[in-house]
Image (tube, rainbow, N blue to C red; front, side, top):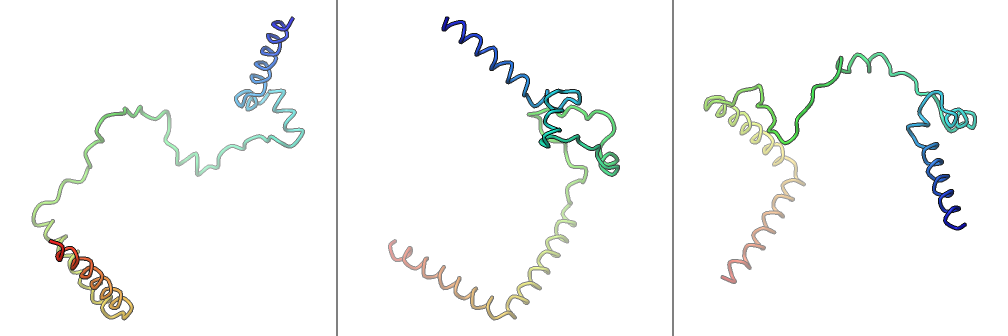
Length: 129
């Protein structure tokens, strides 16, 4: 008798799980969803806005294989002349920012404190050698 009631309990539990599953509840003609809508726990999802539909790609997306290297970038590598010009631009920006930083007293104080802390930290290391 105990084995039969356990089997019935398992069947009832499985049926309850299937009946209340999320995929079944999302169906428009689901009895569960109708009941939940009447109780105010479920709603119908509105279609996406036009700009969302227009921004999505048309058709199915291509399969993206995994464990393969990414494609090479479209922009070619810089040659020596372009690389030196870019480094020069970066150096000029760094010099400009250093000049601005030196004109700001709290930054000068912070830089001096940082340099003193580095010097103090390096001093005991050299003394132990």
